[in-house]
Image 1 (cartoon, rainbow, N blue to C red):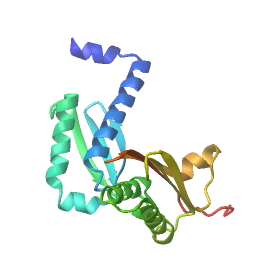
Image 2: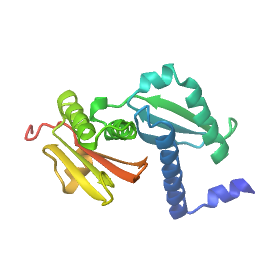
Image 3: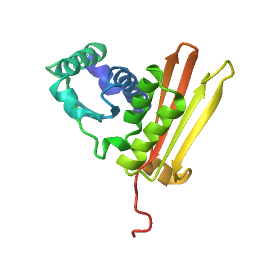
Length: 205
């Protein structure tokens, strides 16, 4: 009876279910793999198995030192979504980033988050991250926005810019990597956003 229901699911419901699955998975991995520089997932589903590829900046550390953590995450996913080894297997693989980890907005926003939690002043932390992105990563542009109760009781937003960024159209989707996190400090919650435009050769065609 369950098999017939799975076959009859309409296209709209399938896309919604896939979207919810990816959103929930993304939330779980953001919380558990923040320190390892989690930078997104790729889900490939077939009739027999579902492959989940996790992109992480510190891929080697995760594979060498934190194998138990990976097994625990796989177990959680299997229990939550009723995967099993017979007819619906799940495969979890950790992959490195296809580009320099200094250009990953997710990895940098996590570093910034832990700097702020450790009490580093906002300006110093933001400039430090921007220096890493621009000098080591060789990015075209970087923008960091920190908003909330930074100092005093009045909430405000601070924006730090370096280099150049496109802000409209398809190039924005293709070249700009964005990551947002929330930091719980004693005075309240800060929102941090990191936007990185990776190095592209304009006019090479």
